[in-house]
Image 1 (cartoon, rainbow, N blue to C red):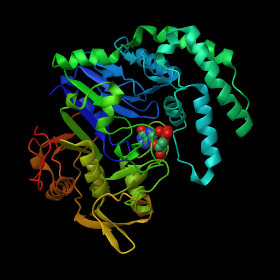
Image 2 (image 1 turned 90 degrees about the vertical axis):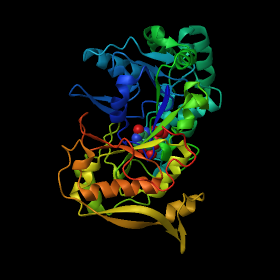
Image 3 (image 1 turned 120 degrees about the horizontal axis):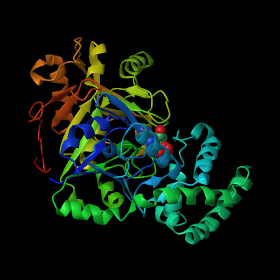
Image 4 (image 1 turned 120 degrees about the vertical axis):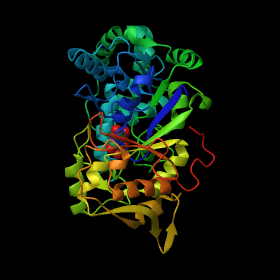
Length: 440
Ligand code: IMP
């Protein structure tokens, strides 16, 4: 099973880093296939905590080759700073490969992300202001600059001239900002290019060879399913495709290269930024989750919105990604509740929805239909054997497994590597488990 995709099935921040760590010993390549430095992966290796934004988590494992695929948008300044910071902590970054086809995040993208959010006012998306949306917009408009352009100063200058002419008009005339100076951008970016040159590679061919040789390639999704540009809660989404299928264009592989799709979800639910969130908890419960789960963003430090597990959205995500298995993180956080709610449907204008509503008005205005499950009060952070989990915790996991129709293989009970409970066969027997999906 050489191709494994790892995807968040909620609104991001599900704890994907923890699962990478779990699989790292068997993994040869870790590939980022979308997004940019809007992502935040927190990962604890050897007792050390790392917060990575752009560099794939594979960088932390000396036997892994980390790859930034063509579907990623790269801010070279951030990439180099992240590499320098890792080097300072003794992590070798010379294995990192960056696709020449990946697009560059340019200074005007950052500027435009900020001014458009400001202009949108109360309708703002709550972006990370890292220039991600504007960079993908230019890619689609075919005026983007790519990583490989850094290697050819003449081409770089020519493309920059075309793009900057339009951007400066926009910045000055629409937003009343000062135009950006071309010479400064050229100097800065070409210097980045010189430093990055040894890392720029034909990553698609490298991955094809690896997959053909049966080496294990992990496709590491950033953000998550509900933030997917096409399938998430548009317009409150990111500008790329975090779903597992996004690994095909984003890494340059075909659908049959992905054998296993692991969905990561918190045992409850969080979201940062604006947008609908039907299972958002009332303030008292949300505060308990923020406190117990330390729910602050890795990239922006923003307090996350917190709520109950949304089984309707999770089931939708399971189908979109063709999940083969589920990992539930932060189960220990729920120990603070005597009763735990699970959103099992939505209600809008007297109608009940058991599947994800295709109409955004319904999703925006619906009320959650909850099922209430018994909580447990025991501290479960030291449990490593499923048999030692309280009955109510097992029942909770089994119910989620059933609702999402996907076997739960792991539940995490703390940040440490060893704080994982394994369920080789799933927790219970989910109704219709494996229906039409590949067997493990
Ligand atoms: P952008 O990706 O910066 O354009 O932001 C678009 C939306 O995606 C906003 O709601 C962000 O808060 C959200 N978002 C982007 N990256 C992440 C992430 O890594 N975790 C959670 N939310 C994210």
